Image (cartoon, rainbow, N blue to C red):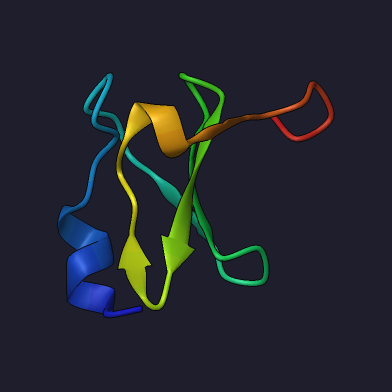
Amino acid sequence: MDARLLEILVCPICKGPLDHRKNEQELVCKPCKLAFPIRDDIPVMLEDEARPLGPEEA
């Protein structure tokens, strides 16, 4: 994933910062408790595609 792209991406819901979880291929928004998938090095920033974080992940 391109580092410059990671710097400008924000959560599409709250516009907050995202944490890149490289091993899981996800971008995580802690305030919204959502993980957005990265497929073929392309972040899928759709709320419908995001998975909710469990209590132990947040």
